[in-house]
Length: 97
Image 1: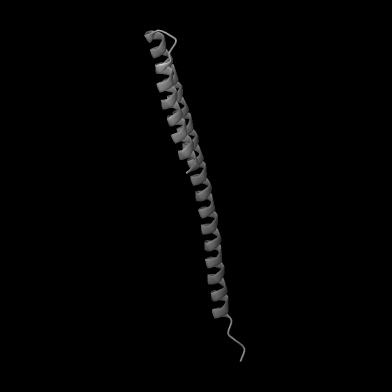
Image 2: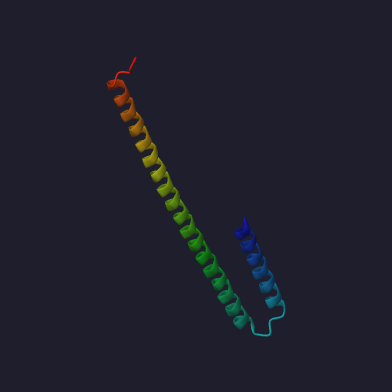
């Protein structure tokens, strides 16, 4: 949720910056358009980097989760096998009366 807020504020700031830049542009129209184009490309690059970072973080979290599930599955399987073995041994050995 916090990352969404940061991204929203980033785009709000970008939009306000563009608006103020156009209104008070000390450069010619062509120079201003080039400046705006470069800033838009910087914004696009930033969003792509953040998306890649988030994708990598999500991938790491998924990998850790899969590893945890695999360990729990192994532990449960070992416990079931131990229970089966204990049952077999209990059935083989008659109880002393």
